[in-house]
Image 1 (cartoon, protein in one colour):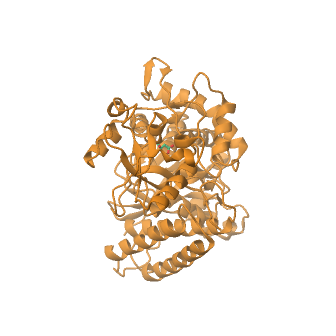
Image 2: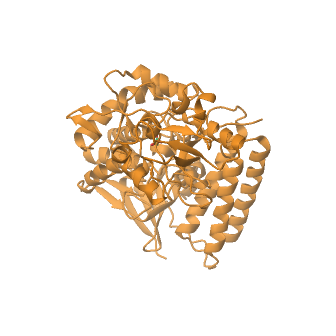
Image 3: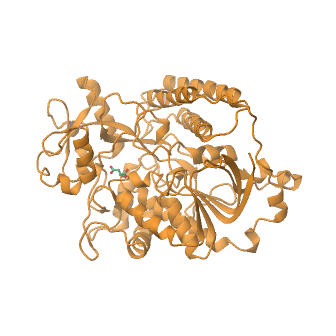
Length: 530
Ligand code: SIN
């Protein structure tokens, strides 16, 4: 295996809304960017799967009302400065970028006369949408814009292995003794060539998305395995709020289908009048919260779990057969089509639903410019912790957050780039080639599948919707043993994508579990029964 070096001004790892926005903002400022995707194209991300919409401002809205709803959903564990930044600056940047520059066709009556929808926890309708495929529509426009920028080099089928830092990788003692650790790029696996590339960058932006796929049941894309969290934790960047894993209340219940992505039934369906009912047809949510079906997600999720426990049923149902029945096919074509594939006509039959892991409220700690605690490293989107979400995220704020922090990171880097921040030749020459661990060919898909099964069951059963000291301790011990066994077993195995992913997933599960053990307060998405 030969090593290969690339030098770029900025390396963006991840191609969803945050990564693409960072790359476009930098490219428009004349900066050369290398944008990595783990898949075949830019669509290998959670953004593509987002159904509901993106928070904007409707005529009767104002930033203070939005701040209030975000803080209430987040149990006031939010960072107020970040919330204020999102509420004031978010809609302005959305207008300038997604609407004016990238022409995303959000639903509208006439030019700039938008339709707004509502979701759980929102006091008013303020969410822009494109039917029930808002994320896909945004990604189509962003991908087209990226393809027109000659200064964005897109590298697909690339999996980042580790961030390069001066403390960990530079061999010269001058860099080791310097108090300031700096990120200078990443080791990246080029899957088609089976080769590790060294990508050196003046600045690096982590935009790898979330980690829902470390859970047995999740709405997330296959790529959401916590790659960025795992690399940032090894590099020594500060991670925060990892215990706040949001479970979406309504995903299609397919029985015991294992390890497949759970199909999301957007909260906008409830926003437009859908009602949760139990097996006897009772609309049970009013028994749990006066906001009923539009209570924040953590509350609705726990109400569904309590109702399933009470009735002994495997799921509850989302009823769209009254009131909205004539509009569902037109308003929610993706959901309608998928339900039909599964044999449910949502115009006449309630949809069976269960909760599944959906969104990481915590992540790599960043300020409002997207800077992390590691010099030259930025983070944006779900991999980051901006403080906006606190202990539980308000619906449809994640696309806005990814867009705003991708844009802000791009702006901040473009301002800083210059002679002072150029990597020196001495530093670049100091970054060693990737050392292949060895050539013992013991990679076995059955073993990898079993290790993933252990991670996913452990997280779902012990670090899931309802947690306890005993469950968390058990998860911690099992994951520590698994991690040790994996390190022993793969010590001399040639690197491959399945092995990189497995190590990222295992490390992420471990740090999430540690965070959950440390936080004794039961709040929001971190619900402890003891
Ligand atoms: C949904 O459509 O319910 C998901 C949107 C979100 O996670 O904010």
